[in-house]
Image (cartoon, rainbow, N blue to C red; front, top):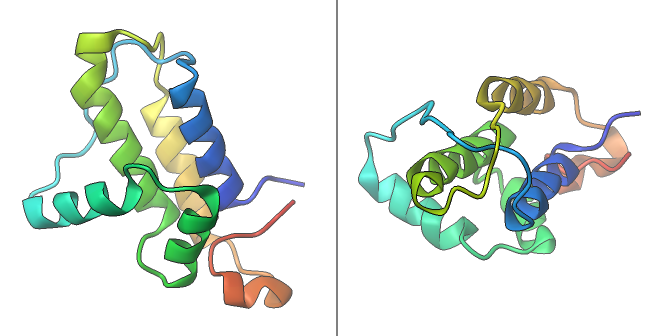
Length: 117
């Protein structure tokens, strides 16, 4: 079994907070709409797992959007902090897209993207 999109993103967040591998991150995507970035910053900056679950259930963001938001932050700040050794941005985005494309379990339909393994 695979971890859910929520659990995968939560793992990414915990990994980033712990300073796991990813140095030298390069931006993969630049948001054109700065208002959308500001909104995501407000929503995701200190989001808890239950808070992220709620955002997914409301279909406010996809797993890919949240993953891209974190990758953009890594690219923006790691040049200063140098906390990460390696960032597999392509792999992260590929995995996020898989989560977005996977069918939702009917028993978890009310939870949106959060499926538990």
